[in-house]
Length: 542
Ligand code: ADP
Image (cartoon, rainbow, N blue to C red; front, side, top):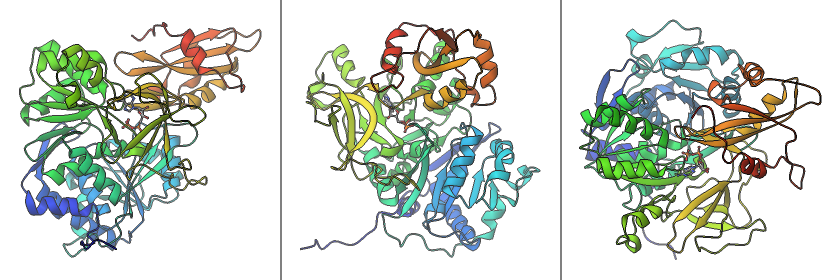
């Protein structure tokens, strides 16, 4: 027997429609590329997003079409998200920090028909556009008077495109499982993989993010959304904020300590979300200037492990509670949050801190377990560590356009590539990573890609790259080289060789030469052994 409830599809257009009806005047503040501040509201964003939908439909964009965006966090970017998603087009966000070769691969693989970009990225797109096979139109996200000269074919100003649209547009009306957003993750080895969110998964994740167990936000909050809209679904905040009526403040391209502080202060932000590197820069700025954070209550920190010093300093110096969270692009992304549960409420500060520094407890829509190499479930005793598997309605089951289909095991679990423990209270803690990647400032560096690039050096016999701890960037790459017999080389020759072949920020912080690179039983380079050998190695950049 079926329940007798309405068949109300969970599509993302309804989130902004809800905001328009119930809290149209809550504000959205954006910092523009030139540093100036503009203000708008959910009501205005709704009206403009609908006009954008109408214009896009008139230009032939249809349900299921992919449209790329490369933009900072700002109101036009939000209008683009909803303008696309409203009628079932797929908003494909691209990370501008990727190497141009990866961008080309991703845009062509996704088959983006149109491309929206902030003016900062015009040169980047001009350089690759000749090799983009599917993009027909480039939309420059600026006002008419800012429109530059460009060699991008069919370039149109965002405001001119908007003017082509009208209010006569129908949003929604499709299945809640319809694809909604696309975000490639280069987290693992090989080519980047497309994570394809649905309207349902985004809606469920937005509600989950708002839960008191997670970010715990409401209409009384103002959120500085530092986490980029091009990264892992912006931790669901582009949906959560209009859903609960939270004011939204978007920092555009400026994420240094002074700029972040200025927005936190002038907009009286009560909550924020960003990777540890951002908070480190803010804390340094506060220490230098003696400024305080009178309005900020809580910050969500994730993407990389939150260092103890950040949590303690926020607690003790500024009275701001850090919520440590873990997630992945494939998990929409929130997978856990380390809030104080009743069982640890009365513990002394230090003991409580040791729980809060773990990655945390999963919300209702995430199931989690750890297994050994043979796939046997391990006990949740806080000591046994194993492969972290997750399952839930906002976890990917396959990658977009991938030939190998399902990425789940036979019981429907997704292997995160993280290695973790789970304690008896349910707090998960990441202890290692089985996927071969380095996380610098919240963004991935593929050690395999770096190794392959370095191997082209004429003196290199074998190369290995590992991530070493770095106080500012969390991890930075160390290149370990075994030279060909009788050959000599300097670190500088490797830097020179790699220049232009990899994104600049991928450049290893150091190059060391070893007699022999160790191998494991299956002949693969033993990263485990290398990590042990270089455990105490201090990068010269520290
Ligand atoms: P995001 O950076 O938004 O979390 P990605 O898909 O780029 O999304 O990266 C996910 C990976 O980042 C995780 O599998 C894990 O290795 C790492 N990660 C994310 N959050 C944390 C955290 N709080 N502590 C340690 N590692 C983390």
